[in-house]
Image (cartoon, rainbow, N blue to C red; front, side):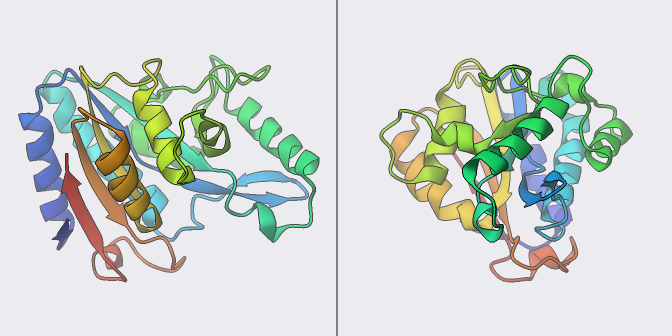
Length: 240
C-alpha cells in the first residue's frame, strides 16, 4: 500500500494505470456517500464525510477526460451507504424503508437526474447520467436506479461474512454490471473500507480483477480536500 503525497501524484499514478490497461472500458467507483434519515425523508448527505464524496468524484471526472481521449469507454458507479446511520434515529424498519424507497424512486427512470452537485461535476467535464451504471433494485419504480444500494448488495447469497467485502464482491462478480475480462475499475473509497476491500474482497474473494484502489479519510466533516492527503491515514493506493 503506497501513501500518496498530493493530487498531482494521485492523478499521475492513476493516468498511468489507465493508459497501461488493456481493458476496453474504465469504470470509476467514486462519489460514495451515506444517507441520513429525517422525518422529511432520506437525505443524500454528500458532505457528511467531509471533502471525500465530492472530491472523489472530481478526481474521477478529471481522469475520465484523459480516458476518453485514449478511446476507452467510460462509466461511473455510485455506491450509497444506506445503513450506517439507521441506528441514529428513532424509526422502525418500515419507516426507514419508506424513506429509502421514495429517494431511490426519485433517482430511477429514464429521466432521472443525479444530485445537483454531482450533475455539475460530471457536466463540467463533459459527462452526464448517460455514463452512469444503473442498478436494478428489483423493486417497482427502482429497476434502473442511478445509485447502488449497499443494503441490496449486502443481500447477496455469497458466503462472505464481511458485509462490506460482500457488497464490493457482488458488484464485481455480477456480469450484469461489470465484466472482468473487458473492464478496469478505479475505486476511490473511504479508509474505513480499506481492510474490508483489500484484505477480504481483493485478497480472498475476487480473482482476475484489474484495478486501481484509492482510500481516503471520511471521519472529519470539516476536512478540506487538500487536507485529505495529510489527515489521519492520508490517501493510500494499491494496484491489482
